[in-house]
Length: 387
Image 1 (spheres, helix red, strand yellow):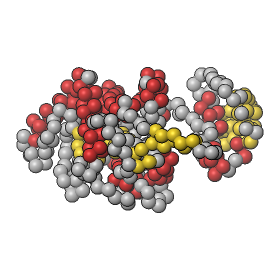
Image 2: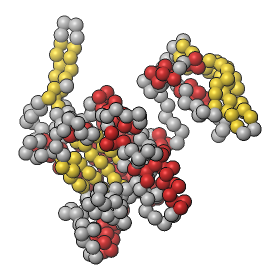
Image 3: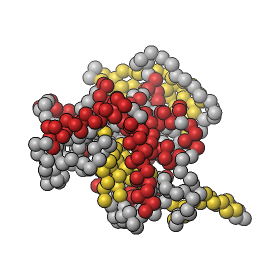
């Protein structure tokens, strides 16, 4: 299935080219697993990057063959490799914080039964332009609050350009995956694993775009849920209520994080709201912040729920106070994201799915009704859209 023959890869340096791989050869048959073992820097990652066609510009394959199902990938063009990469050959990158979402790792090891109940699609979406810009601003103003990483190098916020023609691949990722998988629930985790470098609020000193301006975080963690009109979309409303309650209960079961979350709001009230209530408004629910984002059906909207309410049940965002944090503080932010995501997935896993089967002369057709129902009375057959 995969055979590496005498692979040679060289890197260009200021002192000339150096050989990193010299004569690597091995074979993997269908159904086999092979572990490549060696000390740090021996070339394990470069071997994988060579196979995937993801070598940096300073590197090149100078000899050997990479045979996949009899075809030499070394001779493939970039377009040919794009058709193979991801679909037939994939790679989990070496840095675990940037490669495997902690919730995914937990599902694989601890919640295998959930994966028999739903498909999980994860987009490891980073913003290197924003991170680089953030780092430069911090050098110049190390004590300021920065929000550079919201945009890429040309000032584009990707979410607003979904479903529009764009030269930026980041804007096309979500639409492509949406049409491929047609998910019932979308969770946009902001800041995990600190690549976005932003939040706790997007409103730092930025009126008139945002109605208020904050310079202190209001919570360790909060959620945002797009909310359709409750009378027109009652089952969407029930699902949102169910998810909010489950997430709050999940956080309550972690007293240290729950109390830390409370300290944020107490400090916000003491030093902000008590002095400038117009600038530091107080939310109605101070135990667990969960904002409702009024949303209307709109076929041109970048929001998946607004665009496809007959398919999508929940469109959620999570925010954590993880901007420019590391160590224990970052681990707390990661854990709060896990708690929220775990609560959502547990609700999805426990929700019924009505699947019908039709046997044709030359085919079998499986279909189910959309949107999915989460929470409430699950006995009532309210579904109206078949996919």
